[in-house]
Length: 175
Image (spheres, one colour):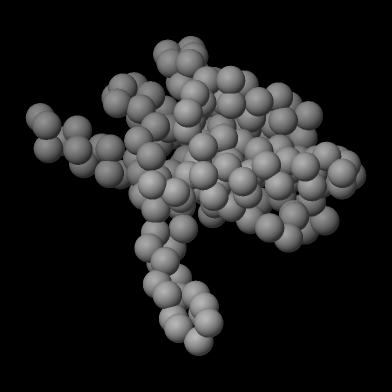
């Protein structure tokens, strides 16, 4: 049974990782700086030397099987373009774990993709209220807020949000 649970968790992770790439905003709403929750290994040139930057694994969003199943469903619906159904699944997951900041972020990403920018900002702020000392999560929330503000035409607010996202991302990288 433990192996089965592990397989479900791994499958959920793979679906969530794939889903993060499928959430898009209109080209005019995309900021020039992106800070994904997960990064692929990359080579960076620094002073004539090549440095390999390792990927960060996506965090465990929940240990609750029902929540994981709802996350899987939301991921599949999102990939199929059924954003309303994806949002409904995430809302059900939030009824089970209302203080889970990762679920609030996932719902904010769905709302951003739907063009519901004000609601996406509100949900990302709600996620931050439960994030505690998780700079990586807070960075992702502020990045999403920045994207939504760009889409709303609030360049000053977007710059502030993206600057804070970058600062938090830097904190998250420090040991």
